[in-house]
Image (cartoon, rainbow, N blue to C red; front, side, top):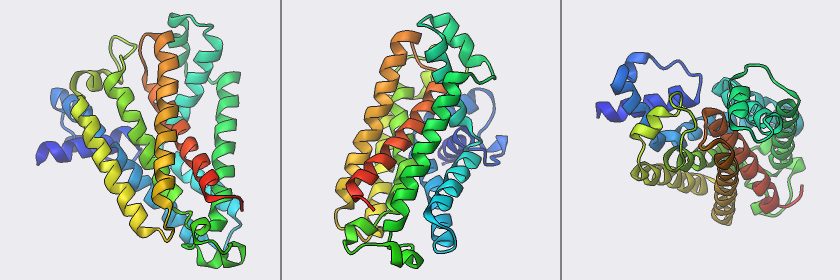
Length: 282
């Protein structure tokens, strides 16, 4: 039970900026083991982030237009994660664009705290895509009753709070295979505990947690067809994460913490975009 709680605490410590006491994770080899095994609970962390976003969306419904609520939700996500994954996006695309295929140069750029043109453009486009997708989804939802004047008659179109819950879950689930099955590009660093302690069985565990979250979302959503939409969103998230990993693994001879963060952010966008397609136009 202690090791279980330590791995959960490690997942929240690694993926968020929530104040997790170091004693909850352990020290030295114990902490490394807890972090490596924490991949099982990545979808649980996503569920917590999604729950906060959905609650805020419900509270703000009717008081702000969808576009401003979308900006608020994307900001909350960035605050909860400390912008860690967004930093990964900037560093990854700076390295991709500025490294010119040279492995050493790309790794050097990823360690540089400064942001370049490629990273800035990638961040702007990613945040714009997130905000646009969320703003498009919000008027559909039955769980925002004060937006009734903006909704349409088809109940499938109105069950749209589920992407706010599902996107963080599925994106963090999609990142788990990257941590387990792909090489780590550096001799030591952020990915070392995962390389040493994460196992294929942990991917199965993370999948079970994500599936449990998906079942709960389906049960709480008024749309009869949301299970199909979540399946499409999950496939989109995993496909995007694996595509990014495949491209960078060839260039870097492995992945880095920045790539993990970028994969999570791009997978979230993939889920939100898939949800706008399956929900139909506003």
